[in-house]
Length: 186
Image (tube, rainbow, N blue to C red; front, top):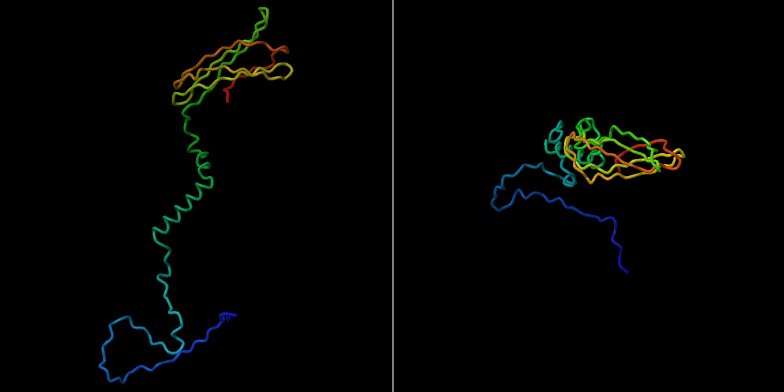
């Protein structure tokens, strides 16, 4: 069996006297930093290090790196969403903002079958030209059933301030018409 290494190792040291009375010619040692003479176990002590400057708070590179790391951590952890919701960004006018106005509906029962007419206009209130999305007409009958109709716009491009008039002719539900609404199809 192998011997397990011991946890404690004894060390002997010997203090040797300096050879002051040597017969050899004395050679001046190279000039180095003077170190205090160490006697006995003092040679095992760690030299005392003086602090550089007691009031030192780090240089500009330290602070730039620290602030940059904090900003990156903020941005990655959701700060980008917070910045986009700030009042600075919300005051800017969107590139394309569509609105629907002047919606009218009427039921024409003069023919064999009743017809629902829905008229109105969509407008681009933004600052850039954009394609008009399809429209969705929702007809609610007297039994609270909702019937949806999709009115295509052929992705027509509307310039800023331009208006697009629409008109649709729909079948009247059996239970009659309670409400009509027009929105952009999503």
